[in-house]
Structure formats: structure tokens, C-alpha cells
Length: 317
Image 1 (tube, rainbow, N blue to C red):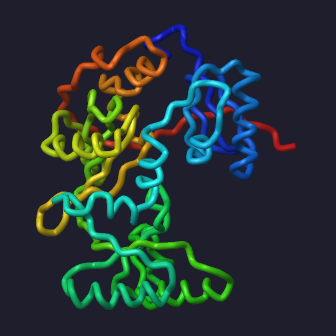
Image 2: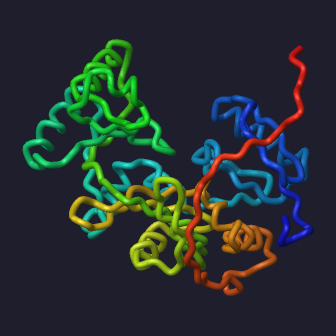
Image 3: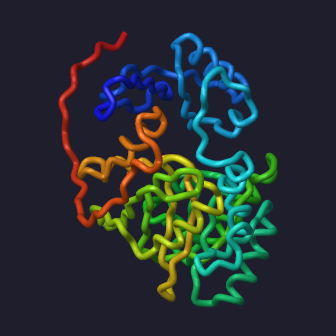
């Protein structure tokens, strides 16, 4: 909006979720099942005269819907299905030097067998698990030889005793199928997150954020640019998306996932002049064309601190 005064941006958020100053309007969205949510979104588009819709919730369902305005998608429906499924993504990148081997498990018995095979083949590695479909590290656990209550007393360490994790899965199976999981080798890091602005599979500009304990280093260009370009072309990435890499014990770099959406951390580089989001908005609105976007030259670091902000009290009814 700062770059284009003609833009009006409307943002919907879940009830009770954080909101931020800046949009023309921010309003709550109802908690609905996918089909009903799509109908609600269509109603909002018509009632509010929206010209361009950028879905984030239930995106797979919007691929199949004839919407009343232009819709921005980060890739094709087929590629989106692959990216959202960690096992499918593993197969799609097989054979590449940045490939991260991943094994699926849909039952407690299958996971136990996978873990036994993994321990025999990689005796000095640490296995970790996470849901086959999920974001933001939800459900990620390292299965380590820790105390029985460590995951309760120190959940921030994301470590759980293997026997307890398997026992919990078996308890879940008495009520129904478990959430499909994937198992892989734990990568000690560091982690690099690429905020990438692309046009039909071609990189326009990006920043690479190396995550540290209290801050991040932001760079562009970055030595993994060739790998990022290869993945962007393979999945025909479009718009502002995010790719995550982590370093293995042997020093090699492995791709963790592609987030077909802007990462929460993509705002960090904006504060220092990267203009990724502003240029994305320009492309979406037609104010800019792909050839108007210039690559970045960026090398800086920042530290994260906490702040306190006073707000007006609201009386409880």
C-alpha cells in the first residue's frame, strides 16, 4: 500500500488471532468447514468488490472452484499437492544432492519397524518424526534416549523417548487411525530460509535468512541460489514463497520443504529495504512487470528483542 496508493487491501483473520495496523480493513472470518468457507469467501469477494484474491486457508479447495475474481496461486494444483505432502515432495526431489531421505509411517507398528531399520543403518544418527502434512513445525519430535518426562518438562527441546511416542500412537489407534507421519534423519543445522519472489518458475529476487539463536543473518546473493533456482523451476513457483534448507552432519545442505506462501519472517527484510512484499504487490496489481524487478544485494544481521506496548483496557461484559 505504501508503494501504490491506489491499492486497498482487505485482510481476514481467525477470530481472536493477532491483527496488525496497515490494511484498509481487517475483519474476522468464521470457523467453517472447507466447502462452507469457500462459499463464504465468494460472498465476501462479491460484497466487497474484490478484484484479486490471495487465499491462504484451505487453498487446495480454491483450485477446484470457479471464483468471481482473479485468484493468485503459488504454483499449479498438481505441484501444490506435491509440495504440501512431505513424502510426495521427497519422491519429487529424489536423486538430487539436496534431497532429504524420508520414510512414511501410517501405523505405530510401521513406525517401529522404520525406526529399527534406521537405527541399524545409521547407528550414529538421530531419527525425528513429523506429520506428513503440516506447517510451522507442528508435531515435530526428535526420538531420543531422554527421560520419560522430558517432553513434558522441556517441550521446547522437542525431544521424546521413542517408547513413549510409540505407546501414544498405539493408544491413538484404539480410537482410530493415527495422523500419517514421516521419519527422517535429524539435521543439526544451521537453517536457511529463502524468501523468494518468482514469476512462473523464474527467480526475480530473494533474500536468504540464516537463523541464529537470537537473530538472523540476511544475505543476497547466497551460495544455495542455484539449488533454489532449480526447485523454483521444477515446481513453477509463482509469487512470494519460502524454501527452507538445513545443514546435515556431513556439512551438506538438504531441502526441508517449500512453503507455497510468504513466510512469517519475510517481513524482516522489508524493514531494511528488500521490498519483496512491495514488489509482489506491484506484480499482483499490474503496476510492475517481471522485468521491472531488480535482484538484491544484501548482507546484514539483526537481533530479536521483546517490547512492551500499552493498550486500552476493554471492559468484560
